[in-house]
Amino acid sequence: MSSDANPHAAWKRAAAYAAVELVTDGMIVGIGTGSTATFAIHALADRMRAGLRVLGIPSSDRSAVLATSLGIPLTTFADHPRIDVTIDGADEVERGTLNLIKGHGGALLREKIVAVASRRLAIIVDGTKLVDRLGERSAVPVEVVSFGWEATRGRLEALGATVDLRRSADGKPFCTDNGNRILDCRFGPIADPARLEEQIGRIVGVVECGLFVGIADVVFIGDAAGVTRLERSPGPSAGR
Image 1 (spheres, rainbow, N blue to C red):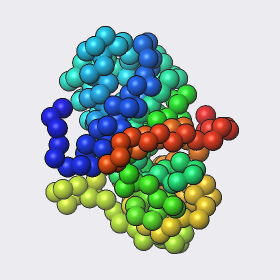
Image 2 (image 1 turned 90 degrees about the vertical axis):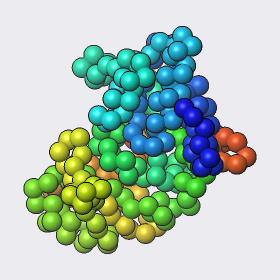
Image 3 (image 1 turned 90 degrees about the horizontal axis):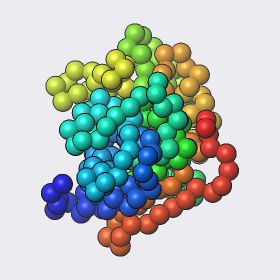
């Protein structure tokens, strides 16, 4: 990839290349989605050109297209139901817990499926994504079925959210790879992400939400000082 004058892009790129060092020969690698994950896909392709052999499982159609174009061979859960390591970005990372908000790239359902199927989830961000509490800066994306999404929005608003239907650049409602809609829900700082994730999940019409609680194992943070690595405290991984 060509160098980018944007320092945030350079920080993400450095974090991506550090995270890809976790990948070893013969691994099944979960491939994330979004602008940050794109750096990891390029870093993985660079290592493959140097002789690394892996198979990838992408979390979106567009990541699959990019990976294929760079020569990364892909596989499916039918052949490999367990992933060795997934490398992906995040919209917010909570200090201390490494809980996440994800899904602003529009692939949160598939990203969570890939994440919980992974023995290890590595997250790459720049330093601006670190927060004291989730929700300080980002909305929580919630993927919902298109039928009756207005009723689903009302139930999310009853939890205290300000809810916006995500739209594409042409003004039409954004459609995920699974044919669903995304509602971006602003809760403000979230005191108990696990409880909120559970409450959202109980709403009829919700497919998945962008709160990733207790799933990330390691976070690589790029900033002007270089790359910092944060590890989650030992303990059971949520859903894994």
